[in-house]
Length: 241
Image (cartoon, rainbow, N blue to C red; front, side, top):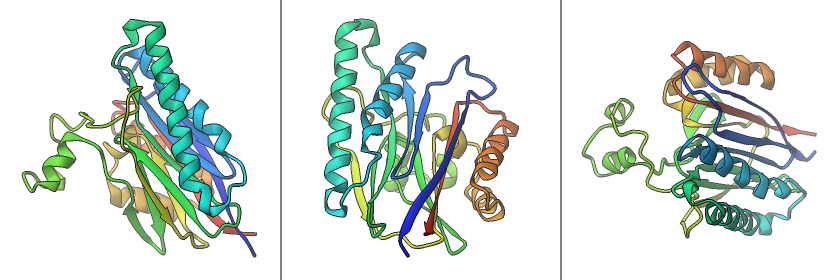
């Protein structure tokens, strides 16, 4: 029996924004979420350029090459954003978050790349754990003990990111993990995580075995909470085949 990744992704503009600056990839080996920023056209462009740059990684990759593949994809995304800004100075300041998970062809390992405030959660044996750490001003305050995680969730500057893909040199976080059959991954933009509590996320991930139903339920909850931002969700299950 080999472990495989099976995923479903969906995205919604939300109830306030005029367009959707999020982009995502939901594939056999790769899942990813990018949340663009820096003005409507530019944010939309930054996230789509980034997903376009890493989508070719959705192929069988040896486990010892996972992190290098993600690094190479992010370098390509950075280059594309830099070129786009060079072509039109009004795009200066555009950028995007990226949270991506790449599954090894053997099923024995996965790698995660992260920058910004989109998130990856792992739901394993009934417990939800946030795997990524937000690159945000308020997370920095939490780390320093200035505010509590509860205060961070309603802080007026919670949307201020400290790192994003903007065409210059950055330091994304990379990690490798050993998957287990039954693992369920949730990748999402902050349009979900800012308005739906972690305990509710866990309930939905536990209560909706069907990936598509689960993803749509999460979007629905974010909309019911006011849908103030674009909402993007990828639900990916580790299954035995």
